Amino acid sequence: MIPEQPPATTPRRFGFGDQEGARSALIASVSTLVFVLVAGLLIVNSPSWPKVRQQFFSREDFVASWPDVLGGFWVNVQLFFWAMVTIPVVALVVAIMRSLRGPGFFPFRALAVIYTDLFRGVPLFLLIVLLGFGVPTLQIAGLPRSATFWALVALTLSYSAYTAEIYRSGIDAVPESQRASARALGLTQTQALRYAILPQAVRNVVPALMNTVVSLQKDVALVSVVGIREAVREAEIYTSRTFNYTSYVVATVLFLAVSVPLTRLVDWYTARDRTLRSQALT
Amino acid sequence: MTVGPNGPKLMLEGVHKAFGPKRVLNGLDLHVDDHEVVCLIGPSGCGKSTILRCIDLLDTIDAGTIRLDGEPIAVGGRPTGGVVANEVRRRIAIVFQSFNLFPHMNVLQNVTLGPRRAHGVGKDQAEEQARELLDRFGLADKALEFPNRMSGGQNQRAAIVRALMTKPELLLLDEVTSALDPELVGEVLGVIRELSDQGLTMVLATHEMGFARDVASRVAFLNEGRVLEVAPPAQLFGDPTEERTKQFLRRVSEAGRL
Image (tube, rainbow over all chains, first blue to last red; front, top):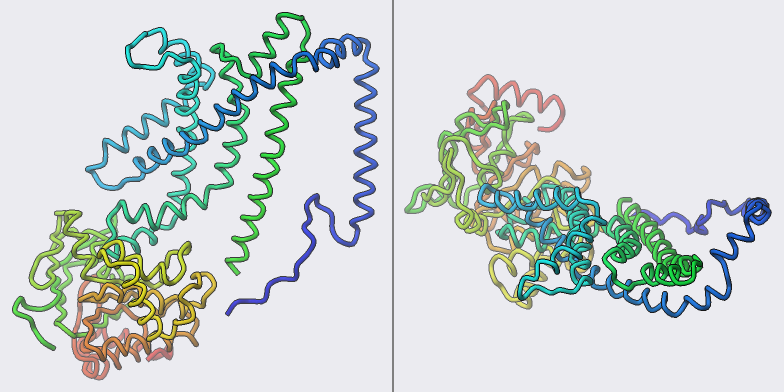
């Protein structure tokens, strides 16, 4: 019953066919080279380029600011890591609350809707400011005073609202017949969700979730606004001391070093997922 | 046909069901005795599938009563409580037209999910029972296969095994051969015939008139949400009393399906 697999072909990663591969690659290389040369010459020959180079691309300042900015970047990585732990959990709880059926669960559904509306509606920047500066000022006994903690809370609240919607779209995409089928076996609503619906829902949305991860990795830089000494904040400190902006370039390089591989990974995974799914259909 | 102390196994009285403005069941009466196989036939949209979904409490009814062993399990206008519904669904099993196996689980995981999670059967015991049933229905080598790697007929047989795993008192079959290629229909019908020989109580919605004639204790002809006529197959197919039934059977036989 299983049809023959189509013959394996070289992956067309950059859009070149097999036959004209070499020729296309040559044209692409030449045109890229020409483009880079022209753009580079335009920039380098602009009247104020020496000044820009001194301000943004100074070798000495790169070396001098590197240790502090790198140290700050480690804070970004830690925040990113913890947010990656908290967001999927909170988001899943919200998504499940929103997809519960029956009149008895109305309060849960309402709560989930209010939550997503509220935290998707507030700019992340404002949320970080409000929580990072606001809550410690309240001086409520028992609540942590650390701005880093509240920045993490702000990231979690905002990103969970988006992620919950992604989960929910995945849950909605599972056919109703799967739920009926699970309930017909005598499973409770929770069991049907746990064993039949959620595994399929999560599989549906992995590419979308991974895009959120890439975006989160960059948005972690926003916490600098409440004075946390992460990469951007350290760059800012260096600039205010030396009036040289190279430290920001250092921070940019560090963020790119993580986000570019991450983006490639997402693309690779999404393409693989698409191939696997189309094979399953034939 | 044995009638238990509580009356028929299944009893539907005056069942009404509408989806929005569309009235699907219109005061339907039907009873099914123990060990009986009742086939529901009738034109598309006559409510065959809806009845089965209502019996398994997957849809609520608007009016009337459905009784299992004399106990009302669904009463019109009153949604059945969650606990009762789960209890009822553990006694009744349903097989769907489009199999509805879980695509992320292999056959063994599919068929043991119900016993393990809804009936609290241990993993080893459930798997042993599953292998026995899979073997009986010619799926012994498919235990670790995923649904999308199997034919429609194999999928449907696996779905029937999944339904049987919980030893249901009543099996509902909703046009289980309609989604199959013609050459795969036979293998599934063979399985159902075997179950009927063993005395399992079943309600089948079907388009396979030949099969209904062969396997049914009684055949019910449905029209516009009511049972218009119910009789043993020889009588219903040989000498129907209602004009509408004759008309339907004539059309079916003209299409070469009788």
